[in-house]
Every structure is written in structure tokens, then in C-alpha cells.
Image (tube, rainbow, N blue to C red; front, top):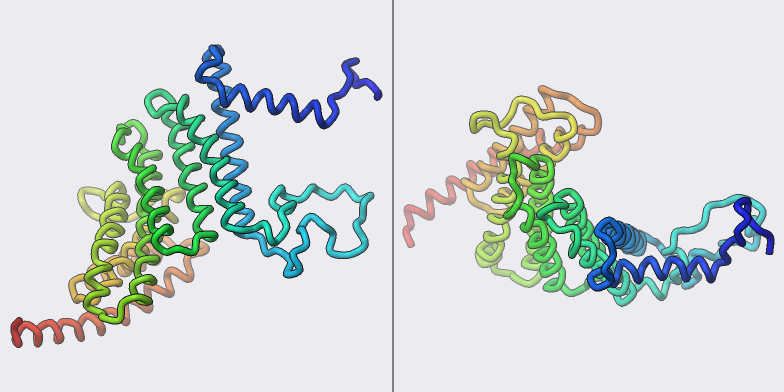
Length: 331
């Protein structure tokens, strides 16, 4: 075997794997190894890298569209492999054959990523490593979200959403908002997005299982309230003297408008004039903001707001007549 420029014999594949294994072992056993603090922190960052890798792999598993014949995606689709071309290596997910892209394989990838994230979080604690700790929490929520496409049971899907929201409740309960404005706002936005996802899922489940519409809306109301509270908590951070802002910074604008739209959709889930009036107000605020500050990529939102600001007043007037008639009839 030829020697490298440094005069050392280059590592073969087996020896490289052995070195990587020792580094991983160092990160896994750092609690009892007596390593210096800087090496322990480096091992924790290595765990973060592995957790990020597994999160990416889990997302790739969910996105992949495997061939119908079960062939591995790493295999060339034709007898012309073009061996001599410097083509990039396929993503690690491509080495999984179609029949391996199952809930069991996804859960295994999740467990590996979650284990690395948990070890990293054990050293990179919130009190001392705020940014790193919040990044790990986001990794954990991403790993859980990666399980959703593989989960068929509705109850377990709802449990996953709850776990994601509970993880992000940690920084919201312990961080000083004035000192970590962006981290705090990001956590609020992520929790609101999760609440909206849970609301959509619960609505779909209730429509399938419940034929009694009054009961459906009563069962849905708590989830509407959770989504509404979460989005209002995020949007409140932009208020100026208790009123919606005239303008939002460009880096926050997309999140701000998305949250207002989600708040409008949440209010529109319940068929009461009061709830629909709240939805109408949010659509009007978004429409006014887009009109005052035009930007590329907002055409769909502007069109939807225009439609809803025309349709909702008719629906609200109809509901008010029904509610007045029901009040006259009494209980």
C-alpha cells in the first residue's frame, strides 16, 4: 500500500470505521470517562451531528418514492451505469430497498437520532448552552415529525404532536424572553404550528367518526382554543401599543402572515357568528398588510383573503339569523 504525503500509511476503510467508532464511544460514555470539559463538549456536538444526520435520513425516507418492483434506489435504472463519470454518491436513504421503507425502519432511525439528541442535551443544558439546547429541542421535534408519515394510528399521531409541543414548552417556561427574543419567538411559532397541525388532524378524525355535527364541534372546540391561544401568543410579540403592527421586518414577515392565516383558519372551524367574525378580522388584517406592503410569493394568500372577506360576511349574517331564531325558541 502506498504512503500519503505525510509519510503515514493511509487508513483503509476498516481502520477509518474503527476510529469513528472510538469517537462515538467517547461521546456515549462521556459521563464516566473523566474527559476534559472541552472534549466532553466536542463529544456532545458530535452527538448533535449524528442526530441531525438521522433526522435528515428520516425525512428522506418519508419523501422517497421507491420503484414499484422493490429495487434499491441505489441501483442504476438502466444497464448503463456510467462508472467513469464523477457522479455524487446517493443519499444513505437510497441504500434501503422499497420493502425496507417501513414504519419499523423509520422507528429504528428515530431511536438512533433520539438517543444522540438525548446524550447531547445531557451536557448542553439550557442553563449555560441556550442556543445549542434549543437547537437540540428543535432536532427532537423534527425527529418526531419524521415519524408522522409512517404512523397509521390516529391516536398515536395525536400523541406525537403532543410530545412535540411539550418539548418546546421547556424554553418557553424557563427562558428570559427579553434576553432571547428570537429564540423565544421561534419557539412560540413552532408550538403554534404544531397546534394547527393537531387541529387539522383532530378535525379529520372527528368528521370520519362522528355523524352528529353539534357533538363534532363540541369535541373540536378545545383544539381550536389551543391553536388560537398559541397563535395569539406569537402574534402578540409584534403588537405596537396593543395593536397589530403597520409593518413587520422582512425576516419575520412570512411567519407573521402565516400565523395570522392559521389563526383565521382555526376560528373558521367553528360555526358560530362570533368565531367567524374573528376569522374575518384576521383575513382582513392579512389582506390589508399585503396591500400596504406588496411582496413576491404572496399572491395565493392575497387571493384567499379576498375570497374569504367576500364569503364570510354572508355566512356570518346567516348564522346570526339562525342564532336569533334559536334564542327566541328558547332551550
